[in-house]
Image 1: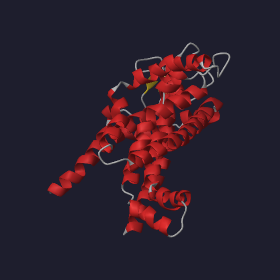
Image 2: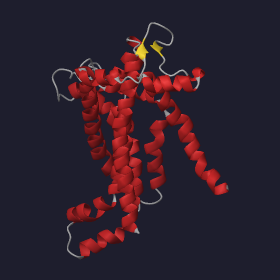
Image 3: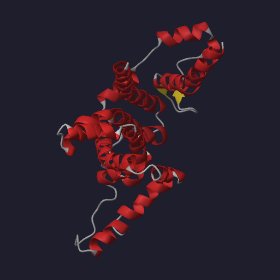
Image 4: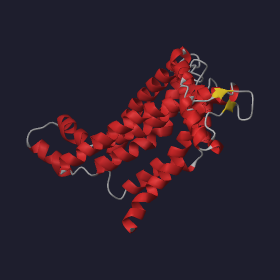
Length: 296
């Protein structure tokens, strides 16, 4: 019974904080907008008992979902969010892999210090860290001041309120989420494997692609998912650093909830976004299962 209690604890947590809120949002997405508080007409009346549940299934209406896929605004917001998140994940991987590789190859005494430096930004509020980039990227900011001082550019660059600023903010904010799983995978690789490859006549660059990178691939997949999934629904970074041309589903969702007060449509947007993010999670789980089966 103790074993069952231990197993039941995470499932109970998942039920309370994921499935129940998801059901509430899904129920609202099937409702109709109304001028009231809350601003929708409920489709499920639990106080009516079985009759209310029967009326719920009899009056199921997926009109809000049809409206989402028929409106170019929402379709473009989904594709734009996926594109920005995917490119940001690639940029983050390119920056994080050398850092994680250097941490894994550093002396053992230095590794805890390097790990602390990676985690150190988490000690500061996420909002403050994003606000700091406003002072760096604006026309009178530190970046343009350095570029003009060294004569690299004649006029200040327009980086703030562009999609490029969103990329910079996402890469900086989610960089530790990519470094940590990469470091965990690279640190487990034994140096003797690379030495054996070199003894067999394998150049260092070829040994990296044939030995190091394949063995670190689970860390690459885990890091990419940890960056891609929250980046798709990101709201703070595109709202503070992006401009009017930066279209992401997080900003669209916020606008529907608080500006238009269209809770049913915004709930449908949130449900579709969740379903989109479930796909990479399932792919990651299958990849992990295959890796475990290959080790056995």
